[in-house]
Image 1 (cartoon, helix red, strand yellow):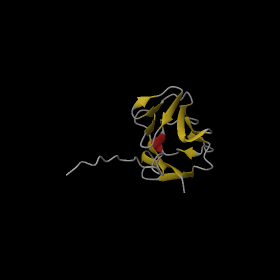
Image 2: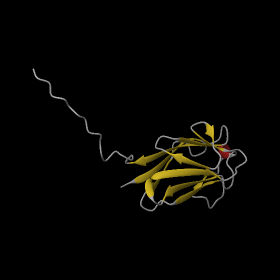
Image 3: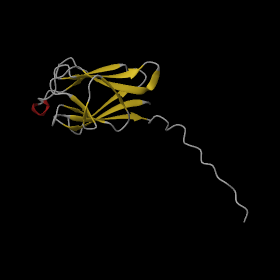
Image 4: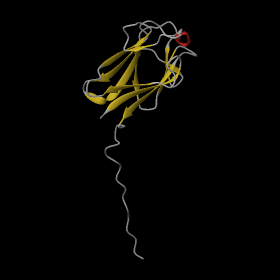
Length: 127
């Protein structure tokens, strides 16, 4: 089954994994709001805003995912860089909520392109 994987690296949910079906994935709200799809509620998550960020799948390209900072006070970082507005995600990206805040790793299973491996060309040389 094709899945979106969020591995919690740091924060109150460290070492936990959230999985979502790619077939039904549209938008996830991430934040401290109890109604958030990915809810951060521990003491280690104090840098996370109530409605901190949105993660979304592009309706026209199911392999394209984005994250949007919702004007959070402490910011959203992708691979250590603070983002403004919408940012594309690729498997392996690390998303952090505020400096020194909780961190997750974004992944897709299977990875885009994993189903079709690159073809190698071989040149025959006379012996």
